[in-house]
Image 1: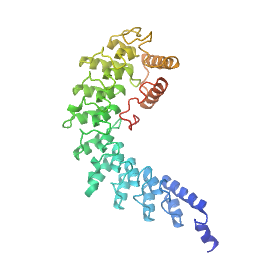
Image 2: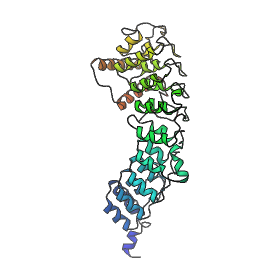
Image 3: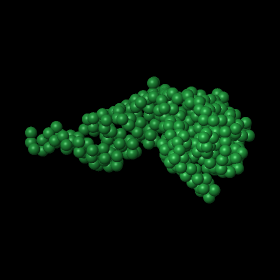
Image 4: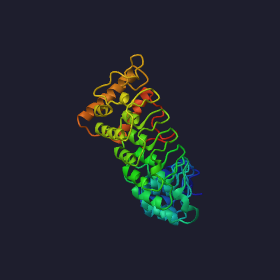
Length: 396
């Protein structure tokens, strides 16, 4: 073996082999086809040896580089290789690249292969990529059923599509037209309507409510007793809440903790003052009981901090007394601990009220979520938060 052959023999220089594989992945991610081809001319394999490593083909698909994907497939890249993040087809589906997905399917990619039950159809639905869903729908045999298949959490592509905060109607319409069940529930008892309400997506809520049988689920509880209206109220979905109430959602329904949608609205830090007041007024018009007490013996007014909401609920100014008081505790202090925890809540509530009074814009969903999570951490209020289920995150 000559010196050049020994240098090319990566079993002699394993460090060089790993470096070349890294260069190949980087070039594929950047769409640098010339570099990809040059590296593959040597003895660098198209796929990494370890299963936990993402392949160059997966990187090319993730970042939408069609020509790089073609070059890798021509050199024998495994089109169905599974990495922790999924397959190449799952990457193309998430990116919404119909052209790359078509290339992979023509190269014998299997749309029935996924990770933790998530299939390419779930990834396409999660980001509202209707074109990729149409392409997957055109597949024959078992692949044709992937548009209705549940993942490990019991969520179908339609349920996943309902996670979108904005848009998603085209993907949802396609899935419904292909036989997706709008009335089914996931492992935590959440229907598509629960999920759309949590996302605050009024367009999807309206679309779902027009589907057969869904209006009857407007007040359906999940495993924790929470209805879609609870979730819309808790996460600032004013428009979604209006759609649900118009469809007959029960504004008096109590969850497993005895909390009504009014309680959820009053405790939320993710709604503006005007929005909270408007939704509360609408709930009261539909029969919500402002005096209803939850499992802690508190009313929605006890939790309310924003002045417009307090006025709608019947409390003009800051709360000073209530049947919920225990040993002199202030009912507005929702936290179960005193000292720094109560102080933190006071500060956050004061800032929220001041921002609303000054006409400040509603905080972004990300900022509001971080604020609420910080508050939960410091006060130990509902350690599980308002998660849909034990395995389902509230993030979007």
